[in-house]
Image (cartoon, rainbow, N blue to C red; front, side, top):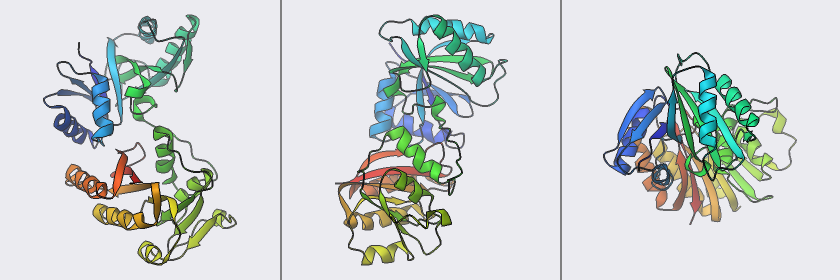
Amino acid sequence: MSDRVLVSASEEAFMLAVRELQDALGPVSVERLGPELGLMTADGLTIEEVAAHCESDPLVFVRHLATEVDRVRSHVGVAAARAIHYAELPDIGPEIAVQAWASGMPTIGFGAAEAAQEIVAALRDEGFQPVRAGAAYTLSCALVGSDAILGLNRRDAALCDWPGGKVRLGRTKEQVSRAEFKLEELFDIFGLRVPDGGKALDLGAAPGGWTRILRQHGLTVWAVDPGDLDPSLADDRSIHHSRTTAGEFLRSTRVRFDVVVNDMRMEPKLSCRMMIDAAARLNPGGLGVVTLKTGSRHVLETVRSCLQMLAGTFEIVHARQLHHNRHEVTVVVRRR
């Protein structure tokens, strides 16, 4: 028996995701349903197999997976009724996550928010405990064109516990820069753990967005940048601002760190070289985070070359184009 696997990727990188999937899984068929959504089929294909390749290879442009179980071309009440049928399958239990999203502009006559509300209400009426995320199983509703595509799968095969992989984070008054969303999303979807009271190095830190997020996770931060940090960070004694370049700091410091992050605007291979240089100051088992600014030409080849380069020094823990990345890929590494 084969699964019909719904694959989400950014609109710009969708064909890169297809290339990755076909390189990893062989002659699979991927039908593009919407700007960010495709349907992958092949004999014997399972969502668990696809998810395993996404994590281990890794496949960096696939953001989210779901298993199609039904399609509805009618009003929202029919979608809700069909959702109940699948929620009643054995082994699911009373708690189930409900997630709805749209790819492009659906023409079915209702939106993702209305679909989610109707499905949640119908499930509650039947004694279920619907939640937004965190349940063992996810019941999804993807709207594309005139279709509402219902999906049902275990959370651990979805890659991301947000509807369609679209992580929605709200701006706060404390936020220093929009770049913070990238690091917040990374902590959210991968559940990264860092040592409370540990030491972090933020290369190219100004204006301090990533530094602020690292402080929220209990780390003392060395923020390295010739430029200024946001004034809101000035009184934090656990932030050490070093007004120099990343290269000069690494040559002169004797501090050892638990985490090193690098979000500098730099050619991808130079960013990787900077991380390799920083490994000398990273404790064994310490984490590194780097964003690869890929541009728009030879993107997949560039990413693969960079991962190979990093793998000489680090274990590649995660690599993905996040929802808050644009022409970037975020890579998490661990020092061997």
